Image (cartoon, rainbow, N blue to C red; front, top):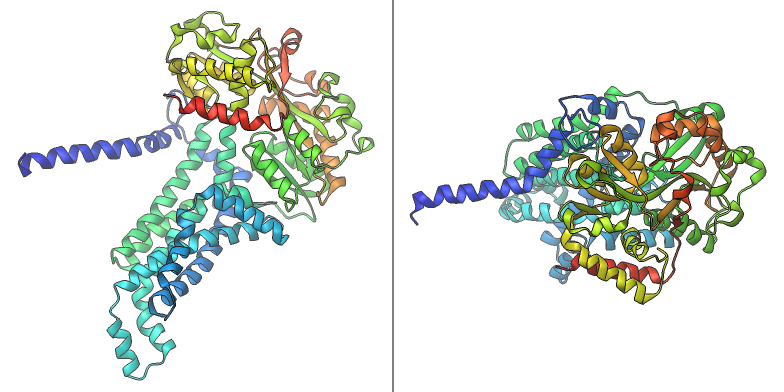
Length: 607
């Protein structure tokens, strides 16, 4: 093929590759302007979601935390990395190659390994998780990038300039300040911008080492995804994406030798994007006493937090997590100063067994009488000695009745008529549990033969499944991408508001019941205030406010009388008694958890 013909072909291939890589990002940006609450179909242009996030106190707090961490990390990591690069390039070190390999190790080590090792290291040192541990962790993995960038710049400098300065009588410091530093400046600035972008974007390491009051923007975004990917999440992700892209563009221009004035423009614009929420929002006055709450995203209304602060004259720090495993890791490390946590039922079993929860003083909880007796005194916490139920719900099937007709059994998810239109949760306990229930067995089964049978069912079903997804199953159902979706009741209750043809059912064979409860860690620094918070959210009016705002099932029977009929009559939020009789709590199954995880991994790996 001639050069003239090859060029358009290669250009077209390059365009397709770039489209494949960046199309999801473009979709995210576009849907951040979507009028619909759920990301399923375009309903018109709006700036509402940007206005909401700009006025959100949680977004402002998490973004402020990210900026503080990123700025401090940038200064410290750039100074250390520049000094290390100079030592490697100009110093007389033994085995510089081995030292360089050691410095590059944080770049190649999986983030999850680095994160868990840092958490254990801080716990061994007795460091309380918070801003200090986050900054130290970020410096630990960012120094390597500075060394690589600055050392590359050093390799391009003419060493004769430094020798000439020394010959003319300049000392080492004068030579460094007048010759070496100006020559390195573009590389140092480029490394600093790269470190800032890496730090402000990091989720994995930060989620392990963050503590009280140090929730960063990536943690905030990721935890919000638990209740579905909405335009509000798309909007904050777009702002973070634009800011990071501008900072990296500035770093790239500096590396290519652009003038500092030219490269500063995108960097300043990126910082302006990150600072927008602080210009739009207003800060709250600090209070003397502080309550530290560690909870799922979208599990407590901002109005509720403000009311508690006003009543008790305190400031409430609300930090977020996305999985029970993240919560367990923090509490088990023993260096997180949280006063109130919100574990699911099986997590309470684990925390109780490890003596990590404080026994509750029931005399300090007079509004406990408002709770539904059927949700109390469960096997995971007999007598509710350590926890009080906060939200509950079920796992079932959401379906489009126009396309599927009536659905009442797990068998519908194995029906070949719906091939390619079925969604299953990406969750070992729930998905294997569905296969177990289909055979009339307990979803807490540990018999290996039964579990192998469940695995075979899921492998047989796999050709029918469009996707395994625990984050946006509601949006997939609403958009029509799937007609049947295994999912949790809270999110599927919300999609029925958008499309009344969507239904939710707990299959006749039975399913899971989850109960998320409030508890107090044994290490809580403010146990009296924590008890006051637990009692506060059990007041009928407050519990009703939380349920109206969050639309998860409340265990507060006194609050139910204060809720509107559209909530109390929604079977996805408040299932009837006959449904409750066929649901089962997911329990801690000990060593069998490893078998569940292995079987589920094998299902997903099956081709």
